[in-house]
Length: 81
Length: 363
Image 1 (cartoon, one colour):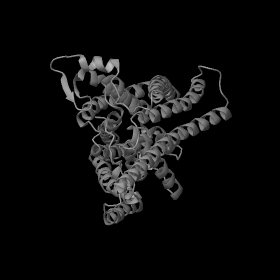
Image 2 (spheres, one colour):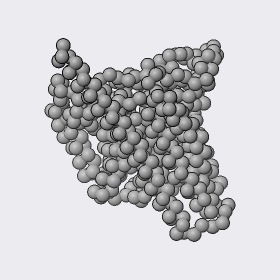
Image 3 (tube, one colour):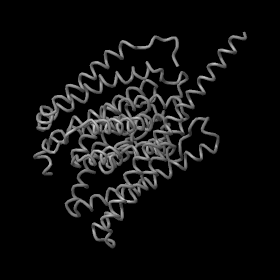
Image 4 (cartoon, each protein chain N blue to C red):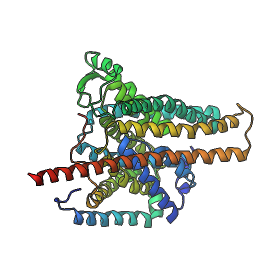
């Protein structure tokens, strides 16, 4: 859709690498994660913080992913205001 | 609640097939959530349970993927000017109270009538609420479609006009999505009901979004976007509560999140291409389809409670599988409508753009 705007290739690649690293880390340390994150009490903040970090990194990655593919919001926004 | 004691022992082993399955269901769930503000959870919880995840861990992990997903979706849709943050937070806080109360009722029902009683209560709530609200939403969407597809601005319902006209001093708050001051005495019960539904059937938005549209008078696009704020507030509180008991399997939550963040971005973009009544179409279609899925399970639970003649194990298992199949079909159907509407909107915009370029070239 956007032919004139420069596509955020480098942003997507960098965020993609960080996001993938986070997932590799999480899945390669499963035993540690299931043991410490599920202890309850004050450890409850571990899964919550993790969720925020993943949503920020992976959310920005998926956003730039669709932009690079050319899937963007309609130019004339149909806000019902 | 013995799960709490050895929750870690109940965390399943994850293989590649499980990961791909959760990723895909997450994607479709996210797509629908990005578009109508909620949905997806009703497939994710039973979906995880079918992999061997204990019920409570499935509910907790689902919730822990829901709040970051809703946050990303809400930020995206706020960029399109569709989010009323104040309304979302006000409704979200009362929804939190509704969640706690709803969970309390669930526990009491489970204590008094056992697992089957609790399942019957959940299914009955599904059937009654989805039939009434879903039917109404779908009928309204159909009327708009018949009247020309909703090119003109949406008008507030009679109830919404009345709600906006009531002035109770000391309780009035201005909300930009309504462009009016309304009493929080109206928003509190609506938020509470949204939370109670979320605690019962995992999808509070089936009450929250129609309530904002029909009772408060918010436009469909803003209602579905604001629901994401409510889902964030509710999800964060709920996740913290479950995490304190060690019930969140963060691996499951993050894998579902991986797929759903792709989906939610796409669903949010989709809302900029469609006419507002499409929100109602997708929501209504999903609600009515899910209704059939849950209705099939009612006789199974009734038979377990000996309220009706016993159903043999083969039939019960068949009903269960068909019910789960219909639920997946409902979500896939919703996703298909979103993608199709998005594609059509995108093509129309491109054609218009081409026509404008051509026109410009002539001059």
